[in-house]
Amino acid sequence: MTTPQLSISLRTYAADDPGTWQPILDHARAADAAGVDRVLVSDHVVFGENLEAYGRPETGGVEGGRQPTGPDGYWLEPLTTLSVLCGTTTRVRLGTNILIAALRRPVVLAKAAATLDVLSGGRLDLGVGIGWQREEYEAAGLDFGDRGRQLDLTLEVCRTLWREQRAKVDLPGLAFDAIHMMPKPAQPGGVPIWVSGRLNARVASRLARFGCGWIPWGDDATDLAASIPRMRDAVAAAGGDADGM
Image 1 (spheres, rainbow, N blue to C red):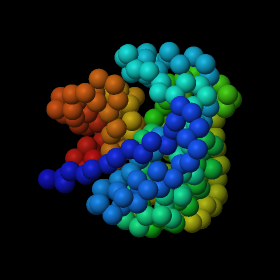
Image 2: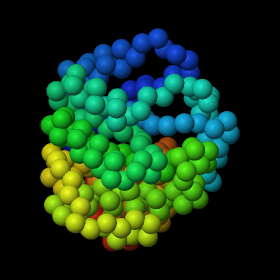
Image 3: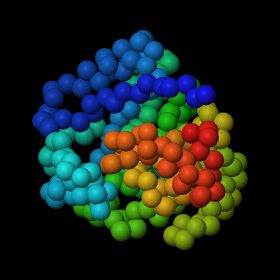
Image 4: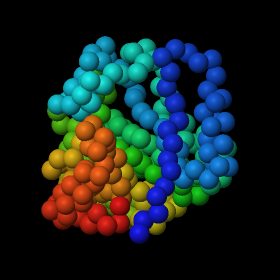
């Protein structure tokens, strides 16, 4: 039987300038001392002014949801934040919930995550998702409609660089051969990837290929007793094994 774990989210965003972000460090240290299993931070790089999309499931939002800060809210970059928390904690795992991974260049994300995993002694968990705002992708020069494929490419590149000494990737839009990246993550096989999303065929396929855990989203997060068995069946149908998640 899997032992339940306790994860808590740290408030790494604010509607207005908080003046100091010291409470984040204090909360992380308290979680570390109290035996909490994992602390989590969230992600947005930039915002457009169309925040209504957060309440639209068809674009990746949550029915009736509201973006909490407005476009000028203060959002800390998650991997940078976790690197600070890494130095002020000793035991608690450090995770993202979620990182919009496709906004980062894949090889740079692979390097940053591997470095953080090494410096933390193998405590990093990478929770990833596709996001919900078109303008955020467009500001990064990316096609919002292609974000699922971009995320899969990013995860494939990261996993390859984490596992292979002489890495080769041959994917639509990105190919390289005989590429070396050191250090590798401290955790064997690479940084654990948690896949977020409303359960559908694409998310099930992503879980089967890359996931060690699922972060439910939308309606799936409100009825876990029903959604978890559906997730297990969907992952199995996609050729994966949900028993270890």
